[in-house]
Length: 482
Length: 137
Image (cartoon, rainbow over the protein chains, first blue to last red):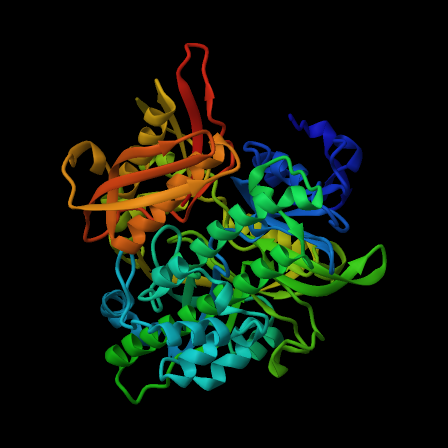
């Protein structure tokens, strides 16, 4: 399948469509949220072919969608949204990804960068010491079998009740850090074994803990509601459900692939394997996915506890602890109500590399945020900048309440390693006032800014399209990576 | 046996080849071990851990991907890298194998999963077996 520019029609500013007539297997159109230069960049890999394939999923509603940070994945594109009709539309583990509930959270401090500048290097080293990162490094917590089941059932709540978190955090986590449908019995022993010592660890790849400061505020009132102000130091955490989530996805993609003939489902790519949501196999996966999502929320809560420990070790035990602004998933499936052909319809919304971006008024949002919309946290590439946005009402009209999740990769890891001299980059970042603590130079080279799209272009596109508003720009001063 | 790593925007695309299906599967295991720790299987010829794996799959391609997934899970759960495969039973859809490897302190790369995307075990024009394998990183 080859997609040419003339196959793509502009249907409104920043929204492009490949019509349903493009391919006989498409059940709905395929839509791209992008500026024209970003669309041209997106066409350089196989993202749009994968988007067209997603449009063939049984029960898909409205359109298959990709955000401006999209890049080629394996089956589903990364940066995609697919909403299927509840209760018998498809659920596809590939539409969530192997890192179930990979997500980001932002912790705010009461310190200004001007006051702590001389302690940033020590803070970066202390964060690296407190938060296990990289491959094969276990965390401080070793879960018993019973504790594992409690983590899978209760998510971030478990961390709070066991002294690894703060109760006030729970209201500021998507779904309060716990999906009710989780069933630990549907998570394999291998998955549990892989998760036994990984709570409180960030892993490797593009996962990180970063210290930033608020460089710019775009909307004073909303920034105030989020507790953000210019010059404020904040901590950004990006990771997911670690080996446990990877194993759950691996287990269920295999099972669901075998079950597809029973439901007369054929897909153009095996990684799109799916079954009806309300089938036995669909429910088993969904409940296991909810359990893995809970593990991820617990993981980010424990990492926050480690970050708070590092913070207290540097600034003293009497300093105000880091406060959770928000925690949001970008690899997950949720049952939500959105508009389809002007009517409110319950759907299974798959977000793979896409962030929920609910506008003002949603019941689930914390009281302080109900009037202004949900915080959407967009991490940029290492050494550039990140953003806090606010979900807007238009996201319900065109993206099933979703938004982008980052800058979006543009270079392969191999190409990045060829082009980047990691020790030189580390030194250059240091000269710019950014301290990098990483397990290897390889990790620094692979995640170099050159490997990513310009996050400013991605965020401006999202802002101008109306699905989310720019609220604050964050500038990094320390990065901890695996 | 051939193992090549090809470009992919975010993940790792590996092309493997072998004069027999068994050799192709062996190439997959070595190629994956060399990702977990660069060049590990090229350097380590001895082993201090073995494990038995039984797989029943939908077809030959799934058999390879499912076997690599099992080897990967065992690598993480046993903190080991496996480089050698001995086939006890081997058909198009079933494999009983023993894998041999070495315990390691850590890994250089985190492979999240072995995916089915683009995988297609087939014979090339010269009668050799080949396939692509995409690893989620």
